[in-house]
Image (tube, rainbow over all chains, first blue to last red):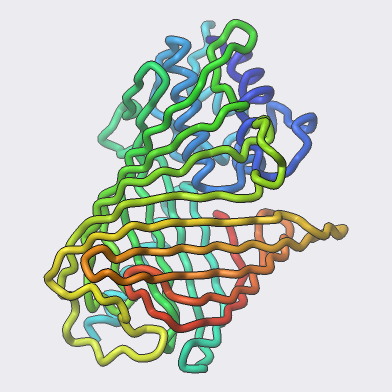
Length: 86
Length: 281
């Protein structure tokens, strides 16, 4: 999985799926933070649980999840979790 | 004195957690009219973070065909001056979810049209702010997530939530130097010190979110009801929390609350009115 695929899937599947903020999903961008869309703490735990499942289901290695992941933008989390192939 | 020290130590520990970590932390500060009609200051700290001990170099999880288990510590502190309701809970939760899969651009993803079934299994402790007793608790629960905007269920259902839990444990004697607790601080449960606990808990919540939207803020209503059946003593305890919420900028909000019943561990039957602001850090 590439960072680009992760960003696209997060914006089009996971953030709209766990959207508890009432925001229009059309406003979500790579600069959107997870906590601005998923406002409830128990749902944030569920989002992390399902993102790890997403990695595992697609045979993507799961590295250590950043402690402040929900404060990161979609773009920043993709950089933390998926090494660049450069 | 011993109690006050423990109370302050716990508060300082909680604050230090907020400073040193960037976890999921919510702090609320408020004023309350207690069961004894006293004016009290109230504080609340809710803390949930990913399990990422510095000793760990990789994420802890276990997957199945359509399931996954992840781990998270949680910390919830509610206390106040005078005889304000208090509850302190710390637990480690293994979150098992079962979910349906679909595909998106060739990738396997969660199917949000279907309910995600969440089963939290926790081990932890609960006490009041005077630490007169400690309950060691094992808990197994079921909390379905059907509130996704992509789920096909009727919209009105997505404003609700429910959970069912089985709680088992033991009630230990705590700080015996405390003065007698009165009003809303009194332990009114039938659960006896040095005895085993077994409860069935049901939770139901409803949240309208923003009902009336203004230029810089909005107003909503929320209600939460918790019911416990004390299997050992054949007693029923309840807690009802009615909230009018004013959403402010930067994720902060102002709550006007009416509480009937303190909930675990005191199961006080009194009531309390609160006004307070809540901040996410």
